[in-house]
Image 1 (cartoon, rainbow, N blue to C red):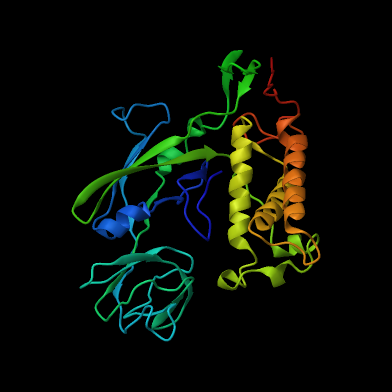
Image 2 (cartoon, rainbow, N blue to C red; image 1 turned 30 degrees about the vertical axis):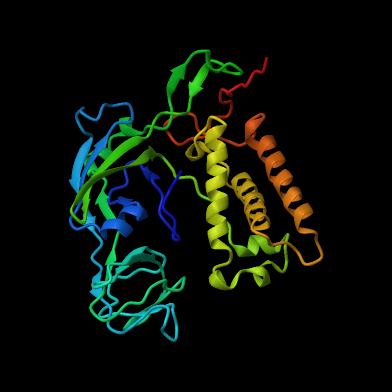
Length: 346
């Protein structure tokens, strides 16, 4: 499951079958926002089947709901202020910690993306220093747009798109072949967002799966202390107190990427403990690669050790013999003896 997290936004998510009220979200590419500013109107949204043409009948359509945050700066802020991370505002209503916003200079025209770390009654404290100077009457606007998944669509069990298609032996590349069995790679639904930044009409695409259950890990910084007791003391000043949460997000992304490259979808996995173990190993690897290791260890040796530990554990669990429990149907239940995807090398 590629999914938006508390610390950011992703273009691929999973929604649960027969659960109403779920949201799909969209944030424009930051390069567009820096050039043109925040979206000026709600996006028109079209949801298509993964294999359908852009001209085929949509699964459903919607008009997005824009982020309601649109306020003004109430006092000078930026690189010449006492604290470059504080932004005083006329209103802090509806602002959310960890979400992205665009702050723009009315006279200078400069823009940047900011992320609140904490919210007060008349100001917000940002995760990073402001790069420019802002004055009263400059603006802060939200970027996120959302739609609610159509209730009729999500209640239809035939819309579960994760599993169930049969396949025969076929060559994927000169060196790789798949055995016949059950294909777990049903394509995701495609979501077209048509929107305007400044005076420019644009389109972007996001993707989602309909699943019986979403893949999740259940890790916190306490799980790292078992193997790296002083890890919290090593967290960088800019994200201190977050418990290496950004690196955990990166580890989860890495694990999902590897599962997908192995020919499976992470939402089919039905084994929490093995997922947690693999993601924890990936988390340690990401932290090591960022330059953090126990004080008495050589960094390069620690990085190599954690990379090998993750790769070998992943191969034992998934890539080699698929030892994790999985669901290869659409019911959500475990398949005791699923068909394996074989890799044969000449």
